[in-house]
Image (tube, rainbow, N blue to C red):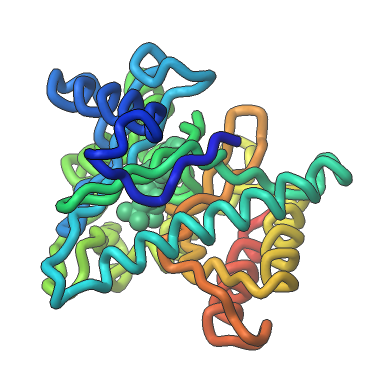
Length: 291
Ligand SMILES: Nc1ncnc2c1ncn2[C@@H]1O[C@H](COP(=O)(O)OP(=O)(O)O)[C@@H](O)[C@H]1O
Ligand SMILES: [Mg+2]
């Protein structure tokens, strides 16, 4: 794994060559709009740049957080913690997976961080796959697909396209929440109205789409056990994920599970900490939905 100093200093050009190169690569890709956006929020954005621009083995995911004024130092502190937690989790799980292949999930490789006066960026290995949330939405939409063309669009659509499709076809309503950035859904069905859904509680989406779609489960028992073992090992090493919802779990085409987003992850004093219990509650939900 490449390691870079935590802070980037304009004056330290020679000492921080890799930083400069990395920063230039990212800046030029962003300036020329050579990126794909996977999330834009009030505190920052998540963008993907291609292998051509990263010059590495995989495309890069660039998670940018806009620094708050000094009086609101939390964003920056959280971001530094996110990077440290991600690195610790990566090392822990990668080592364990080497000794016991197939028993754990993957975690994207941390590539480096860039810090300036106005923003903080972390650069991660890009994972090709879908989040469990996207997968659930696909299941729901497939149930209503009217043609092969529909099915094709659903199979290949990204998160935004899936959400747009669901809205335009009148399967769900989207309404914004003043307190949260995340999209909230209300499912529409002819016979019954399902209360508002968030992606944090997507059981209803899965239920509406059927637990099983064309004999393919949302996740298998084996995949659930990988999630379970990975979370157990993190907890045993005093790390809680603390944000274990379906948009923070990815599945690759070959079935490999990947846990992402250590943005709320933290060091805990006991494995009965509230955030650990929340991780376990999510695991219960995933267990119910696995086949
Ligand atoms: N390493 C990655 N590879 C591929 N997609 C990713 C990766 N990291 C994040 N994403 C995508 O971007 C979305 C937002 O990233 P995430 O790390 O969860 O940020 P946030 O803190 O904004 O939730 C994820 O739900 C996922 O779709
Ligand atoms: Mg997330």
